[in-house]
Picture 1 (spheres, helix red, strand yellow):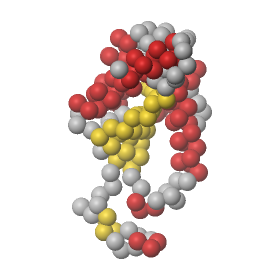
Picture 2: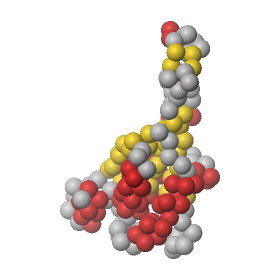
Picture 3: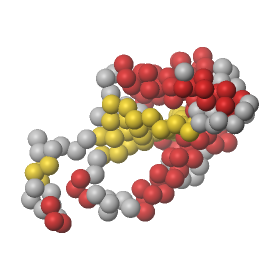
Picture 4: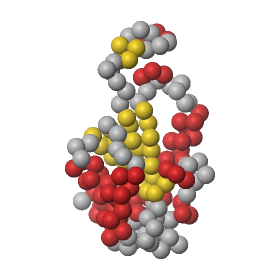
Amino acid sequence: MTQQTTSGKYAGIALPPKKKLTGYFFGGGGMNIASAFEVIRAKNKNEVLGDFQAEYEFACYDTSPANFSAKIPRDRIYLPQDIDKSEGGGGQRGKNSDVHKEHIPLFLQQFPPGDVCFVASTWCGSTGGTSSQMAVNELLKMGKTVVVFGIGSSIEGQDCSNTLLTIS
């Protein structure tokens, strides 16, 4: 089914059905990226591309409530219930791996993927580097198109080590 543009210089042109873009944000770094997206989206709501915009939804996954932002509605945040939420992963990649293995499928059920999925996280911490990697694998198994945005570190130490482990 196609739709017609309604205004502007493209008025009356038949468009393909809108696609759904789902943004998935993981860990503290992902929460920061999601907060920035929400500020931009609120400021430019339906003004940038008009009829050409994709339907957009997003969800965040984190293990530490300390990373929550007032800019992100609480119902868009998934916090696994069976972890010590006082400190999240604390940069220790293996700390919550078993929790992520159990909860990433539940997260993706609660926030179903669209036609195209955008996954963003830092790779140098704990939750973002491990849970985003698991989510990407699950989304690819579902046959989804996935775009990955990862922020790593080349500085010596744990951050660099975590980045290299995420890439590998």
